[in-house]
Image 1 (spheres, one colour):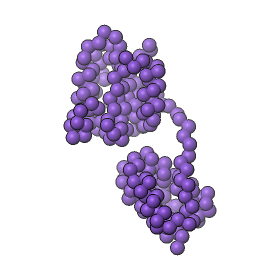
Image 2 (cartoon, one colour):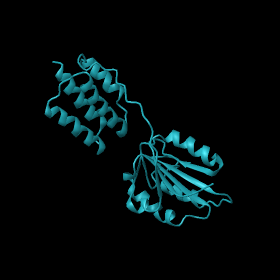
Image 3 (cartoon, rainbow, N blue to C red):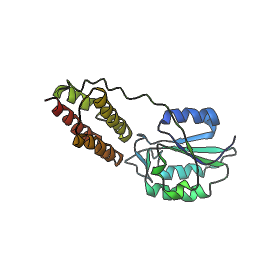
Image 4 (cartoon, rainbow, N blue to C red):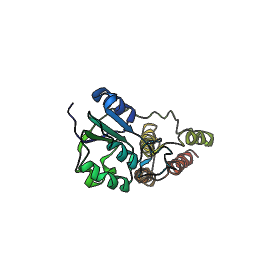
Length: 215
């Protein structure tokens, strides 16, 4: 096996788990995944993960359990607290014998420069189908808006970004005339989503804008 410490940029954790198991074998891998992968990897917070299975302290503990063969510790999370990264920095600089690290995240921007400098970066491109909303925006009414908001009430940041893009595309496809102010709002909503604004608030505002267009 050609083993190196690396960060893999990818947002499909199930796909990456399968790929890594296929490449390295399940016996050599130790996975650390938050119960909810959308959450941050933290230092040690039992209210966040009662089993502490995806905290930085748990990763540190596993790293120092001696193994005769190579052990690959795989960390998957969408964001990483700075204190957790700093806590693991020394471990990444001087890992125990036979221990290697693979970190999977959707963007390299979640990492501190000190972490990035110690890993090889691999970016996987996946072809994603465009989100199909199946909405007639010219005829949507209040009941339709409520159904739409309920359907997407638990989406994460990345799904929200995709949904805002899909809604703007549907406006174009369905020939809904947006003025400059409305177009600017879609852009601002997208930027706010990137900054972790609540998806429910952004989508409610966009939905009301579209409802108003039908009056």
